[in-house]
Length: 384
Image 1 (tube, rainbow, N blue to C red):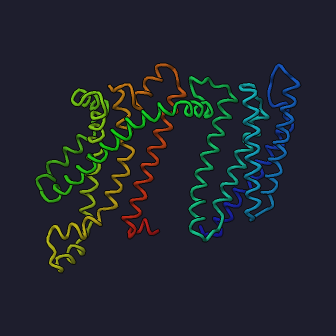
Image 2 (cartoon, rainbow, N blue to C red):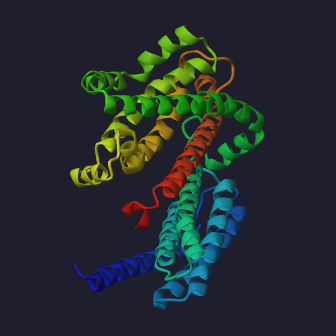
């Protein structure tokens, strides 16, 4: 399929989005009131407010109908969608669990219009590198914001009990009111168990890979055992580590070491074997010995594999430490807090801990990715 046909196809999809969003918005205007409540006049007033929101959405979608370009108009579409989202959030917060079909029609129209803006944003043709990076960050950020908005509208609109799934606003309130507790749990789990276990496990796996590459006996004997150990479940290892190293963070770091050791070992051994025969012959023409060949040629060639293991381990380490805390820990830690608050039915606190874990894991993964771009700038995947 040619680029021209792909462009026409993309325009056809965008045109369908515009048509559906506008048609749904107009249909919602004839579905008043948007909620059922005993206090009729108040609901009627709120319905008028939603009527204004529908008109704003209609204007914004009309802007998108006939405009093929124009960043200012795209930003106007974003502003209209944002205002509509705020009005819908205010309305559903006032009448949780009582909204009707017209409200959900506006929610669908809002989602389509926000989706349309993200598509138009991704089509912006910018040459400045900083602007490209800003757009690259803005697209997933906006998508995440709209997911949270949709989550809030669905949970509150359908009146889902908080014990099943709390709204993002409830999670945010609990997060803000529990910062000292969350920080203590983060320090215990991430800054101690995860980072220390990650450093020891990855470092030991790297050194062992060098020995395995040098000694053929270790290659044939250790790697099969490594594959066996890596298949062991965490729930079987964690209680043993707790009995061996106690209830504090060293036992959780030991679980992290076991989980991160073998991915680093296998990836490093594979990376060291990635150099082809021509490159080895070139080093022989330079009269390079084993260690010179290792440092000058084989380790640089293995860096993409090593960083791949580091990225995999950045998430495995956090998962291992949290799960290990389910089997014995002091009265602090992310895993301890999750298991305890689930028993107390404080699900909003559980989600706050999950948010901390997600943010920490994402930041850790992003840091490793940045280091990968610095050290493997020569690799085609980075240059591209």
